Length: 126
Image (cartoon, rainbow, N blue to C red; front, side, top):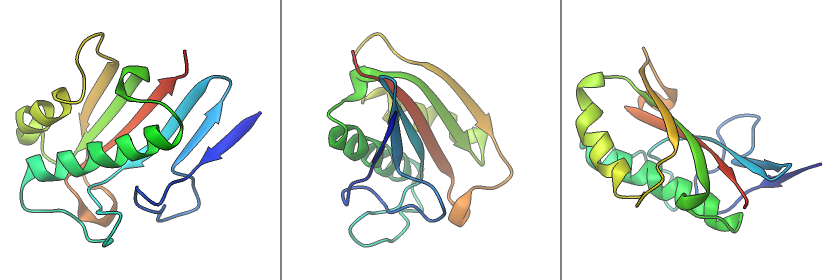
């Protein structure tokens, strides 16, 4: 059984997908980009601000599902420039305290809406 999770506190999907899907105790959160859910504008020009908006979007979806960052077991970070790794990592790290999730970080040629960073997560309800 699955349950679709959507919140107005995170950007609406820009295609035929859900913000997140809960299934069998897991929450699969779709990739989040630095889109402001209130204005719809893309946060750009400062990679740290972009990463913060992405993490805040993830936080909103987790909250809607009754979870938080301690429930995350896996993250995937996609960036258009690996030169931004340290700055994205710095922001990302402020959202976790210990027992960090498994993760991969990859450089990609392009991301939706020409953003510089996108992050997806898998969380578990324990």
